[in-house]
Amino acid sequence: MIVGILASIAEILPIIFYLVFLKRNRGEGLWVIFLYCVLSILTEVLYGITKSHIIFGFFLIVQFTLFSFFAYSSIKQKKLKYIPVIGAIIFYVVAIGNFANRKFDSLSASLASVLLIPYCIILLYEQIKDAQIDFVYNNKKFWVIIAFLIYFSATLFLYVYYSTLSPEEQSMYWSINNISEILKNILFSVAFIMKKRHTDPYAVDSLEP
Image (tube, rainbow, N blue to C red):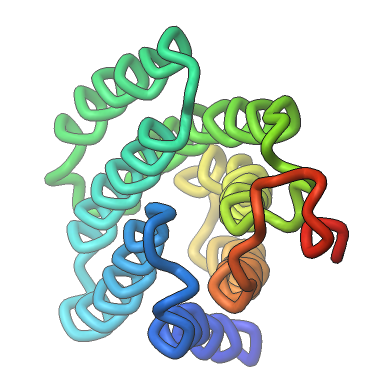
């Protein structure tokens, strides 16, 4: 119960920090993550009112779409840009087919995690290999990628087995999702608070951790 409340509070933090430090977050595609955070809160509110899993099914599709767009826009190698496109086709076929499912769509949620984790790995690899980035942890996108990587990795097996669990077990193990949500939103907040860094590896400011 306490973890669930903390998770709900944590969802507000990235929105606040994005708006407070709006000038710092322009021009890096972070508006996609801000939109994701806003829709996440709206989904929680609507689900609390309707108690319909269709709300979560819709958000799952939106979540996958937004992060796929973020990944596609951030990936620099043209050959690798085909991966999010192919992944989107596979996901939409499954998710739309199960959209009217009245229960939690464990299959689509699991598939989304399986597809999005490699996107995170590709983005991290490109950031590490990018000569214009002095320290990856000085880059805003790095923290966004790490946030999603932790979230999707932590919840993957929860989603895989969720439909096989009893209601009591589902309630107990859902804390894994809540804790992952807290970590994800804290890392989003870190990204939104950070100042923009120089891309020149020889600049004095770029040496600041």
